[in-house]
Image 1 (cartoon, one colour):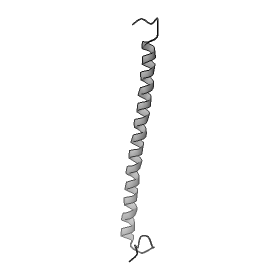
Image 2 (cartoon, helix red, strand yellow):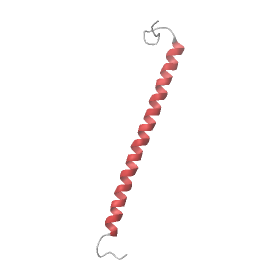
Image 3 (cartoon, helix red, strand yellow):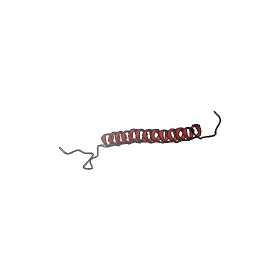
Length: 64
């Protein structure tokens, strides 16, 4: 009654499909984490650019 994948059985199709499923789940997780990291980088870059523009707009003596 034990799982042949966990206890070294010769059920290779089940083992291969389980490994493929784990690979797909790891791939999806990696893609989602990479997209989230990219989003954070884009937000940080936009905030930096907005800060530079704000300082340039409020600098005294600059013709507008």
